[in-house]
Image (cartoon, rainbow, N blue to C red; front, top):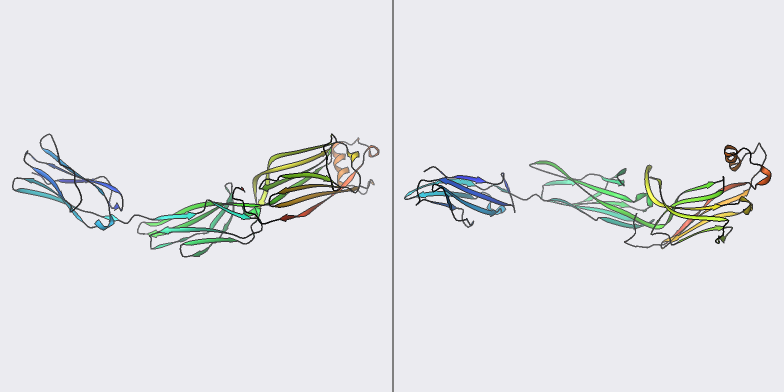
Length: 348
C-alpha cells in the first residue's frame, strides 16, 4: 500500500471565501480498505472505488481565514495498517481594494462643486495620485486633490462650462505582492444659462448672422431682434436652428463639443437701415443670454476700407457701390442672467 496523494484545484495560498477542492487518491489492492479525511469539522464526500484498486475521496470547502494553518490528513487503512498524507492549509485574507465615486456630479454655473473619491482597502499602505480631467477622451488637465484619510476631494470654487467632462480618481496600495493601482471616473455635468461659444457675420452674397451655443438644459426661447423689435415671419428673412459641433477651448485645450447653431439670413441688404442692431436672445430654465451685432453706414472712401467692402472685392469685383447699402458691424455681448437651479437630468 502506497501513501495517499493529495491534489488541490487551486494554487497556494487559498483566498478567504474561495471554494476549493481537496482530493485524496490512493492505490490499494484490497476491497476491505478505506480512505478517509481527518480535517476536524470539514465535511468530506464518500469514498469512491475505481477498478477495484483505486480509491478517492474529496473535500469541497469554502476557505476561511480562521482555518489558516490547520492540518488536514488523508488516511488510507487496510486491516490494522494505516498510512497517511497531510496538508497544511494556507489561507490569506481576501484582497480588498476598490474605489467609490459618483457616476455623475452636477453643478450650477458659477456655483461651487466638490468631487470626492473614497478608497476601501485592507492593505497597510495606500493613497491617491492626482485626478485627471478629460473630455470625450481628450486630456484637459491634472488636479491635485485634498486627501483626508481614505478620501480625496477636488474642490471647484466656481463651476463653469469649461469644467465639464470626466474626472478620473487614481489610487494605489502596497502589500507583500507589490504596488497596485486602481482608477475610477465620474462625470461632471454643468447646467446654466445658454452659453454662446462663437459668432459670425457673413456679408455676401446675403447678409447673415450666426451664433453657435450650448444650452443645458435646452433653450426653450430663441428669437432674433432688429432694433428691439422681434423678427416676424417674413419671406425677407430666413431663420434656421440646427444641431452642430464646434471647437471649444477647455482650460487651453481644444475639444469638440456638441451644441446648436442659430442663423439669420437677410435676403435683401436694402431692408437694413443704418444704426440698427441685430440681436439674438436665448432663454432656458436657468437664465438668459444675448448677442448683438450693431450696424452703421460705412465710409466708401478708398483710403478707408471696411470689412464689408474688402470681402465683396474678393468675391465679386464688379459690384457697384451705387446699388447697395454697405455696413460696418460692431459686436456686443450682453452679460448672461443666471439663476440657481438644480436639475438632475441636465447633460454637459
